[in-house]
Image (cartoon, rainbow, N blue to C red; front, side, top):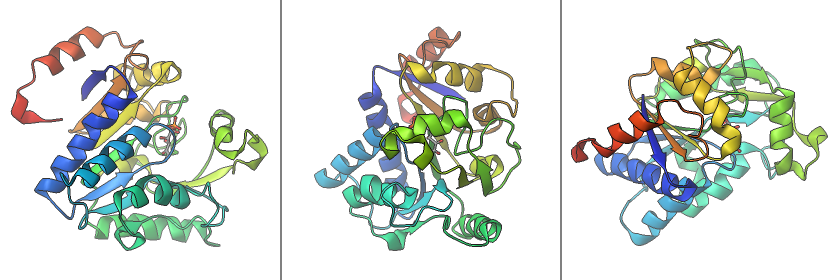
Length: 261
Ligand code: F6R
């Protein structure tokens, strides 16, 4: 696992947008796994700037959603399909024809989960999966003690996650759904490159547990240690509890330039 410590969220967004752009340059039809929340916004902004500047052409790229609330109408402003459309796809000039995601409105939720997991496999799997991390260590919405082998399925959010996400629902925790469809940890680990961005002091404990703690379902983010190509990008605050921060800085500063992240 590579850990890159950046000065701030903007620098993290630029670094990751650069990696996405390089990938699309090598493989124009790449499948990019995209996420919601506050963390990825600097990535989408930096990538949109590159599209506007003409330095990357995303017209053949494809995008796949990591997770979705169960029961929110697809056109609800906080459904993850709406959020991704607004914050990621539209700024990039990408239409819904290049986008796949789980159906959080399905009556048969498990069938919808299975069908999305199959769709990801049929699409060739994500070439690069963006990730954030919850304050409780979740990746996607694989909450603590999720199976490390899990595939896409329904999960119940922890109260901590619902409190964290209430800010997107006007601060009203009762408006935050209890359930989500999320790619499982096994599904996430099937992507070819995992890139996790974490910013802010409130993520420092989760980052330390995921990067330096034991691999354990109690911290789903620790499953990243099982993947051969993971890049964890953290700002100074999110890196503040890493014991090996000095080594991570040294390794990145001395990395061969051709290697990229
Ligand atoms: C969102 C997702 C979640 C978030 C995590 C952090 O699609 O899968 O794992 O990445 O909850 O959220 P923020 O970035 O809002 O702190």
